Amino acid sequence: NTPTNTPTNTATRVNATDTPPASTHTKLLFFTRKFNGDILRVPPGSASAQMIVDTSAYVNGITADPVNGYLYYTLGSNGNKIVRSNLDGSNPQDILNVDDPRAIVYDVNANDLYFVAQGAVVNKYDLDTSTLTQLPIGATGALALDSERGRIYWGDYQGIKWANLATPSQHNILVNLANVGVNSIYLDAPNDQIYWSQGFPKLIRRASLLGVDQNVVTIVTTDATPTPDDGTPYGEALL
Image 1 (cartoon, rainbow, N blue to C red):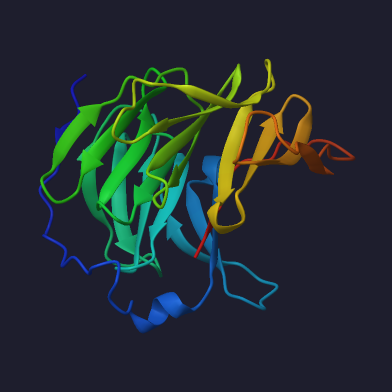
Image 2 (image 1 turned 120 degrees about the vertical axis):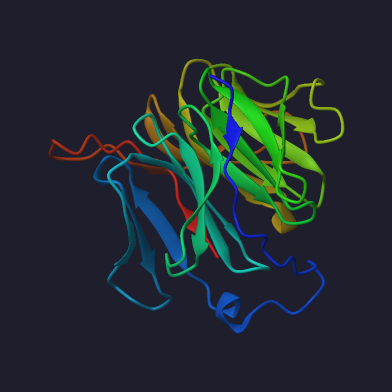
């Protein structure tokens, strides 16, 4: 099915160089409980999580706009849309109707969303013009964006790859990982590091952004004992 735009109120865009709203000075951890259909927020220094979104759909992905103070999240096969809310979960608005959206990242410089949808294909959605573009990147499970370098990173069953946003058809390998299942990616761009979680085996690992297969180390093994939690690490958002 063809994704369809959902009319929304136009958000006031704040330039990335402007002082962000006061609420965005606080570092917050957001995470999803996919099959529960909810999003939780943990304030800094707190040992308890606050539920801020409770839906009847699977919450597949989450990303934050730290400049304008928004949260974007994807509702999967029983929701089929991208939603924007305030950082406390209030004022949810449907942004885009699309089949089975999954991982999602926000480009603070261009005010664009990049997300994986049905068929494991990456799409770009321009929030200023409501323009949807399918990119030549497929078989994708995890996404990350480096706005400073102008690059998008993704994981597939060959490893972690990247492309320049200006030339997304030119794919480059960063870390070779055969058949491990990359579940999520986090970039520490100022320190030239990339972190990812994987399912086979269940690990959180780190590597350098400066070359292929450079300084690959295992941070932690996440196999759970005992079951039923199988220990597979998924994703989160930090603001």
